[in-house]
Each structure stands twice: as C-alpha cells, then as structure tokens.
Image (tube, rainbow, N blue to C red; front, side, top):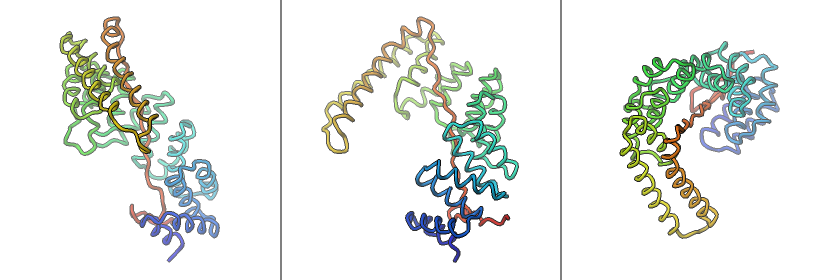
Length: 305
C-alpha cells in the first residue's frame, strides 16, 4: 500500500496524527503534485495553517499540476482570507481545468467583494441548487444591480421542502430588500418561532409592517420581542456560574440582552424619522475536499505529470 493510501486510510479512520505523519513522509520522499497538495489540504482542513498550506501549494503549482485541486484549494484559502483578487485569479484557472460548484461559489464571493455584481450574479447562479444560499446570493446581486423584478422571480422559486432551503427569515429579508413587503411579512411570520430572536431581523420585520401602514401590528411585534427578551434575561440572571459558564460569560450574555432591549425600544422612533434598518448580508465561501485518493469522497489518485 502506498504512503498516500496509508495516509488517506488513517485520515478516514480519524487517526489524525498518523495521517499527518504519513502525508509529511510522502511529501519529503516524493515532492510531487499529489504529496504536496495532500499535505497542504490536510494542514488547511485540520490546522487552518494558511501560510504553510499556501507555501506547499505554490510549490505544487510550480510542478505544472494538471488537476484543479491545488488551484481550487488555493482559491478557497485566499477567499477565506479576504484576498479577493488573488482568489479570483486562482479560481478562474481552476475552472478552466474543471468546473465545480465550490469554485464558482468562491469566485462569486470574490467578485461580490470586489464590487463586480454582474459577474458575481452569474457565478452564484452557476454554483446554485434549489432554494440554497448560492441562489439567494444570486438574487441579492440582481437587486443590487437594479433587477428587482428578476430577483423576485428567483425568490418565488424557493420552497421550504427543498433540502438546502435558506430559511424563512432570510427569505423574508431579501423579499423586503426587493420591495415585496407583504411577502416579507408572510415569511417573517413563518420564521418567528424557529429563529434566534435578535434585532437584526426583528427590526426589519417591524419596518415591513410599518411600511404597510400596519402600525399596531408593528408595535405588537416590538412588545413581544421585548417581553421574550426579558424572560431570557431573567433566566440568565438566575443561572449559577461554573467552570463552563463563567461570571464573564454571564455578564456578557446580560449585556447582550440589555443591548437588544435598547435596540427594540429605539426602532420605532428611528422608523418615524425615516430610518430603515439595513439588511445584514455577507456571502459565504464554500469549503470542499481536494485530497487525491480521498476515501470519504472517492477521489482518484493523481495521474498527471
């Protein structure tokens, strides 16, 4: 059995120290595309050591890798680091070798952060599945470039039964961003009992009702949010501290709930003054396995030069 196969077998069996030692031995012995890429992949996945992983991948690319693995992995790392231009370059190269949804997703994120909304919209769509966050991000880009009607058509395809459904409150948030206030309220209502309650979305819910001239309903949501927050706050105050729940943890949680109450109490006057709570949106990068010979994902070993 080759060193790479032994390393992959140890890895799939959660023998991490043994797997690392074998990946390192293979890299020292062969210094080829497979051994260097796999060591980089392991180090990034298990230790998040970007510097060492990038050094290994730079050397791998110098060998003229014929697989997209090292390019996709390097693009992923640069995306996680926020080095958007570098990520863009590496992921475009990866996609010329083999298109993958992970590379399209990360390329979309890089383009979004660089301000290239048309390109980001296209790449998010190529990365998307039904009702998932990639399709959601595609719709967000359409809104940002002024194509709200097209974005609404995309949002109308979302379904709670789809496996990757983004969630009711998230969908409500984007409907509101597109100007569909009634649909936003509908989805906020659906998500009320299933989401962690915090001002970032509850105050958006209130603003949707406010814009629909449903002011009594909006004030009722504020009242309920404050009441539920008070219940949580009193529960936290009554909890005993221990080594896992320290005095510092408890105080931090109390301050967090006091801040929530402050934001709930302030939102009404802010809405009256014309302020609209902003949508909290941050596109997320996608991590994938780029390990040659991975037993978990049935990857072949490297067969290039």
